[in-house]
Image (cartoon, rainbow, N blue to C red; front, side, top):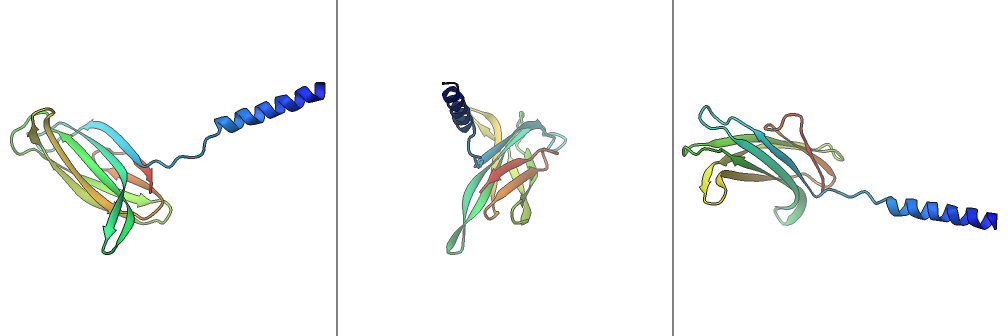
Length: 145
């Protein structure tokens, strides 16, 4: 009887461990919270960012890519508030990398105040991709294409 209890206890422990061990999930999107920015002497505000897996059409084929977007809230609108952020990416599996500027112009929005939104898409290839933004020093977004 004691041996039976040991076998059952071992089986329960193994089964419980199996239930708790999930498979590694690939992240299809990531976000960076809003941080304060000064776009010019008369335009400040905050900027947040997001990245997500996106298909990119290159000639006659579709490739793996990442869309990077920024949301710029100028807080005050004087008709000329624009923010340019440099977005960089690195594919950790292939070593490929690139960067581009994203410029959001603050416009009047009846519901949300003065919001600027802009995005760009990178052809990154398949793998783990790290995205960085000049507006968020030291922060990164990791996604898997």
